[in-house]
Length: 409
Image (cartoon, rainbow, N blue to C red; front, side, top):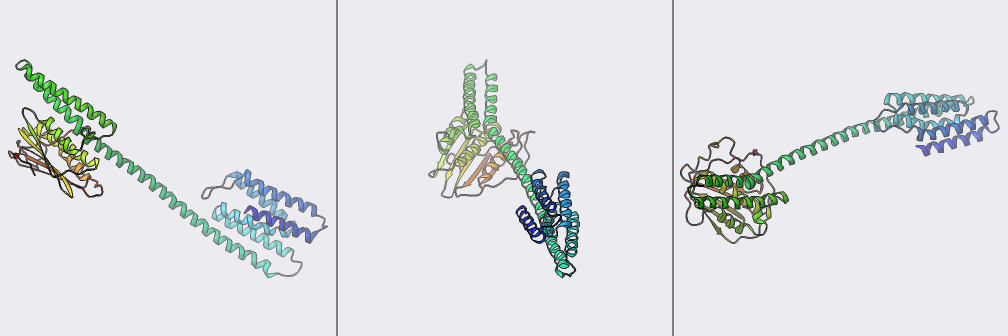
């Protein structure tokens, strides 16, 4: 637009000099042309145009008014300056409000027509009367349409940016909730279970402290060993949330080591491996190990069992884990027996479903309990589990199920 203004200004000045050379006001008109051009160009730096969709500042409006005033005076002296109305016309339509811009375009058009008719030298020229309004009408219609399109685009862009911000905030909240759920599950299956076992051992040591010092010392040693393992879990938990048992071994040896650790005077835990284990993703191994830890913690704390079995079954298309005990059992559909508990089984179910697997609990009062988790080995999409998991250490009271001597399917 600025280049067009300079070109039209030069052409208008050249036409004036050709047509009116030697006139009485030539020097004044040439000076006015120079002032007009300098004022227009200086305003581009001193009074920048407002951004699209915003109201112009008073400085910009003052510049537009000064340029128009100089142009009107110049038009009265040199009709060739009428061509300079085009840049002014487009500038006004682009930056001013629609009503003001249309009024300005009408005034500019009338001034151009009046100037053409004034210097027609007695000959009527239809183009002088019809061409400027026609060009102005077409230009006004096109620019107003473009302004409206730009306004609609701004609205759509604002909606898009607002939607993106809302979506980002929603995803962030969802990520926070998912991370909280994951952390609550990790803490429950590691630190909380270790602290619970230590509490039981220390209480047992306190009960037999005077009657059987050797047994009390044994309980203290077991509690210290559990504290050591819990410390290792806590450090691994802080580092990368991976089970410490899987740091240097695979799932089957880790489950065997877990069965040995959980075995004691009151509970015997055996491990069975059915099939040849293949390399598994780390998250699958970690989830199955956590499920086994949570299930055995339930057995020790609630079931009153004397025997439990861990069975890892490796098939071509899936891997399954079964934890069975011969404890007191429970009604599967019944609510948790103690207030503030009930986190263990929902956490196990969440772990299995997040891997696209299944989770099941079979139990009857007096008949023991079997907990089963199966995970497919083919790539599956991660499943979002809508079930809420509370961040308290809650485990439903399990009930015993007789455990066969051989592998439990």
